[in-house]
Length: 290
Image (cartoon, rainbow, N blue to C red; front, top):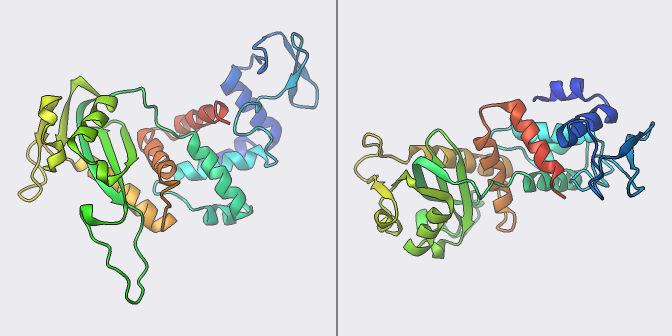
């Protein structure tokens, strides 16, 4: 859902509230305090009164929108702009677009990223690719600056990705010292359906024992990048989106917040096929977050 649709569909707070009520309750309000359906609307206040516990409430109670002084329309605009930017959008750019202070926009964006967390209970299956990458932006060019090495010798942060062919991706920020066979096998156990999957990796030694756990094929990138169905091009494509987003939009991401940015990119990748359902899915997740 683009920003033109947002402004037309949600011209005021009342339209936003009604839409959230439809998503959360299917237009049958339930008391957020005692779960009673015995409620009645409070005219002109966009709230409801519970006849059971005698408390008043709105659809935003218990969500990330609760006690926010920002108009819901601007919340929706920020969500829409974040979702439509494939390689991300910075808080500075968003603050200019909707005329808000950058710290306010930054805080709201992180709340939204919290709602973008990948469902860890759903296992990946089919042909699954796994790879590690190093992200963190490019170092500034300074006199006597230490050259940032490539690969596992870099000072950048390590992330491990597992992706289904034509499906979803899971990405985990990890310590590069934990890229051992034991740790990588644990990640596969937690995130992949071992009986219904085939694993594709490169020839990093940490993957060498995977065949004891799952059907496993490796591609030697020194000889070729594709050998029939054996390749890791899907996860490499995701790394391209993630790295260009961090370098081009955010320039640098701290270790503390890296997983949140990763969750944003993974959420957009996993729901890339339908923009409107992605907007509604994220709103539903926001309604269950605080």
